[in-house]
Length: 160
Image (tube, rainbow, N blue to C red; front, side, top):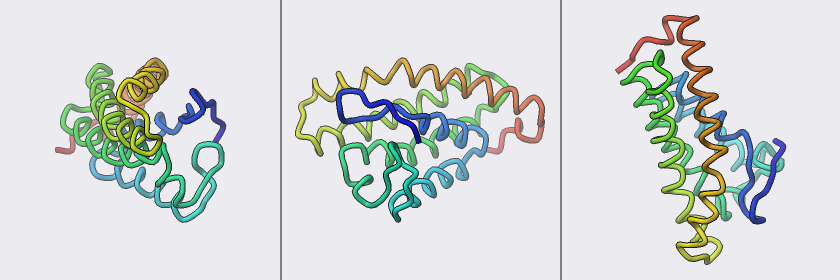
């Protein structure tokens, strides 16, 4: 997976977009299960992580918290989208901001600080660098999910 690295630690990838699409289209619990499978494949050594990395060291390294947060966030996002529906882009977008931005940051940033020994200010500074890109991914996800839901009404139905 091609990456761009900011501050030498955390890469920018389309991984988050994949998590958002999986959670929003597959819903709860399957979106979270698909993200968990992706993380498991990385842990067993498949070179599918950021920068083509794989192995347990990816999960235990500085950015491992973002992967763990991605699993939790995908479960939250899937549940919210199942509850709120898939035809309103604002609701789909808000579900992704809550689950796959806020939850991922809430798990990933403290993990990053723990693994690198950086303080709160450094963690927040690093995290805020990713917000614009993540919000662009939220908009893309909302537009794709609403378009797919309108084209395939069975997907649009709330499952809760």
